[in-house]
Length: 409
Image: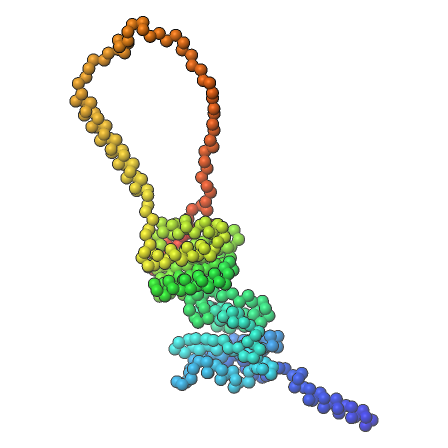
C-alpha cells in the first residue's frame, strides 16, 4: 500500500513540475485588441480580440493590436509601441514571439508593424511590406474599421501559413505613399518592377503628378475606362484636384486590353491623337508580350507630355486636302491661261495628210501582225494587315475632367 502511495505521490510531483511545459505558451488572460481612441465599438473590439485568441495557438505567435492617439513630448512612436508590447505580458513561447500592429491616430496618423522573437522569421520583409500595404490601402478606403483589422489578421495568417506570395498590395507603399507600380497580374520580374518604380517616382516628384502603372486580371465587372477612373478615385490618386495618370494593362479573360487614363487638368494634354500616338508605339510590344518594354515606352511618353516637351503628331488630313485643292486650282488656272493663249493664236486652214505624200509612192500590202512570245503575269492584290481594331477614346469635363483611351490585344 505504501508503495502504491509513493508511486502516486511521485507521479503527482512529476505532473506538477511538468505542468508549465504543457500549459499554453502565452497568457490567454491578456486582452490583445486595445483601442484607446474609442474608434471601434465594444462589440467589434471583443470580436477582434476573440479572433486573435483563436489565431495565436494556430500560428504560434502573438498578434496584439494597439490603437492610440497621444504621445508624450519626449516619446517617439517606436518607443511607445515597443514599451506597450514589452510591458503588457504579450508574446508566445520563451522568446516572446509576436507581431504588433501599432496604429497612431493623432495629428499625423501613422502605423507600423513590429516583429519579435521567432516572428522575424515567420514572415520575411517582403511579406511584412505587403501586409502593411494592404492595411494602409484598406484604412484609406471606405471599408469599416472592423473589416480593416479582420483583413489584416487574415493576411498575417496567410503569410505565416505560407499562402501569401508577398506581392505589393494595391494603392500604397509601407511608408504610406501612393504606389507607383502595382503588378497584380505578376507579369513583371522584381528587377523590372523596381526599375519602373524608380522611373515613375522621378516623374511624380519632379512634375507633381500621380502617375502609376497597374496590371490586373479582374476589372470587377467594370469597363476598362470605368475601372481606371474608379481606381484613381478610390485610392486617392486624383484627390484634391491632383493630376493623375494610370497606365492599366488588363489580363481579364476575354477582355485583354490596355488603357491610359488621365484625371483633372492634365487630361487636356492627353488628347485622342496623343493617346493614339502612344498606342501606336506600344502596340508591337504588347502583342509580343514584352510588357516591360511597353511600360518603358509609356513612361517616356508621359515624361514628355507632363514636361511640355511632347510634340503632338501632325494631322496629315488637312495637309493632303490642301495639296489636292492646290493641284485643282493650279489645273484650272493653267487651263484658263491655255485658253487665252489659244484665242491669241492665228488659225491656219487644215490640210489633209495625204497631200504630203507623193501619189502611189507608198503601198501597205500586208496588214497582219505576229507576236512571237506571250507572257501573262498575275499579281495578287496586297491585303492590309490586321490590327487591334483601333483605339477607343473618350473624355469628359465634369468633376475636374478626364480622358481615357486604349486598345485590345
